[in-house]
Amino acid sequence: MPESLNIIDLITQASLLVQIVMALLLLASLFSWIIIFRMSARLGTAQSFDQQFETWFWSGEDLAKLYQGVQGSPERQGLEQIFYVGFSEYLRMHKKRQPKDDIIDGVERKLRVGLGRQQQLLESGLTTLASIGSVAPYIGLFGTVWGIMNAFLGLSQTEQATLASVAPGIAEALIATAMGLFAAIPAVLAYNHFTAKSSRLYDSRALFCDEMTGMLQRETSAANPVSRETQSTTSQA
Image (tube, rainbow, N blue to C red):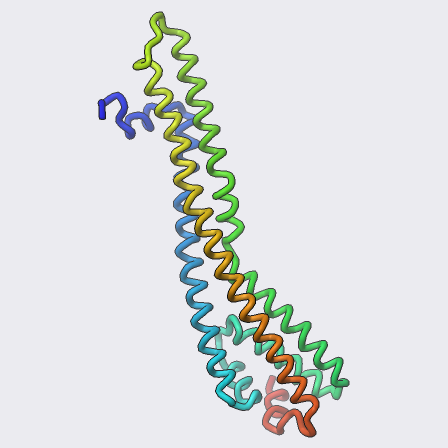
């Protein structure tokens, strides 16, 4: 590549506004990659924890003992936290001897709230990825338009207009577009991937909430729905 078209030289010799645009796009790209790595780790951990808890939940252990184990966990998350808030509400309302329908309605509300809060934590960062993916190409395009405008303004001041005289200005302008795409493409791909993955986790958790509600309905309909051990757990909570 000729020295006049060296990419580093084109960036350093670009106008101040184009350099600012390039710096913003570089920062956006770095920020999006940080979010991508964090979300990848978070979603992987959440999926693993949910699978472990579901295995524990369906092992046949008494719900009261399961609740005691979850209650002692210092950092509840995912299905563990959803189960905790739902069963806590069940114990609280059952202690007050509320009607069966009211108990189930209260548990369903708590489960929905817990599910929504966990999903918010899980999807933290998706909005930023979407913003970078949608805005970065236009920021790069703005830098390109500005650079080309400056190139043609400089061309108008020369006596002999040649391609060699205008090529560096156009090249530095096009670098802004390339950097915009470099920032946007990974962000859009990651957004689509993480959105699909978080939706699958949400569906799995929602199904768990429905199954748990059905179990508690059967518990409430039983002659002695809450064991003495559960009652002592309630008093501790």
